[in-house]
Length: 305
Length: 152
Image 1 (cartoon, rainbow over the protein chains, first blue to last red):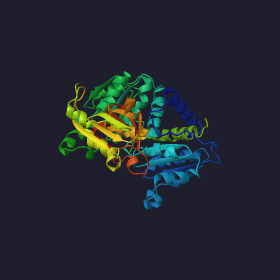
Image 2: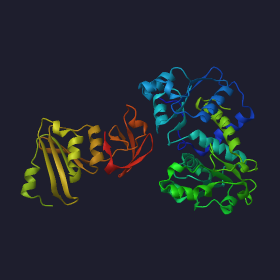
Image 3: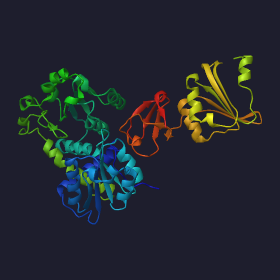
Image 4: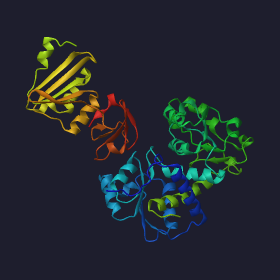
């Protein structure tokens, strides 16, 4: 049986796929309110709460003219009664035209896409993948720089556990980037990803300090949270936590085209005085998620924008 | 290498069945368990720590009146990649081949990632064989060393 087109992972996307989705997102942004999905039903199944992602998907579906069903809290579903994911997905497949799923287990989205006879969109599967986040990052980069090719991308903070930075690296491999990694030793980019980069012939440099030199050579400064719970030695955390706080005064040597991205929510890694600089882009980045999700929902349903 | 008389005795011929040769001695009982040989009614000869030119020490299993299914051979390949399988009919070796890891292992080994969907849902596991030493979970993409895998 041929499976419907799902969107569960970044790995399988080609350069052309990425550019096509970016073009569709730009079209969605030009005219966000459409009737292209009138009469269709989008199911949002959130087995793990994520208000920001769910609202973004539901807004996207509504703006495309679709109706939305689903749940935002797994406590109200049969999974608490022991229903398998398999059964839930088969049941929802009978009702909806597309399933948007967030799950706390890794690989859940891929599994659901193998069962469902409707397209599945991965809205995050544990610490594994969150491909729509990566696509909205790419859309934000493209929109602010006018291209994806040949950019200097500086990734800052938790590069060890941060799934967004790992997916971003994977997606950017098609576009000849130069990476700069800024992280404490405990949270450095894992060797497996560095090996991949070497295999693709993509240059990268590693730094332990977020300073003017690192900032000055970036087109994109991608900030992530350094989380206290990731450190075995709390003294070590205390030592590094303020090294990765971006402040407006550090942006003096930044390139004029430089933009700061952050998957949000931020805690203290970007000081509030950065918000008013022309470099801050993280709130606009979140808004871009709406247009990219409109594009992805349409794409899996075979609709172009 | 010249076989010792003792070794000749251990590997005594069977009329019909299968000989699994070149099993690493450390995995011999894993192979017995994996293939459920202890439950067979027919004759089973298990020889451990035999001299081997290629391997130093090897183990061998002879099973009368038993011909393994492709699925059983895939299971065998996980614990004894490189073992040799000989099909015996009427005392003659009618087929002989080396066990090779397939590209995909379905329902044979367990993922070592506790938060993988395959450990939390009644579903067959699925792994891609990366090289002869590493497998990657199809679902969560965690990689495991083959010598450490747990059989389902």
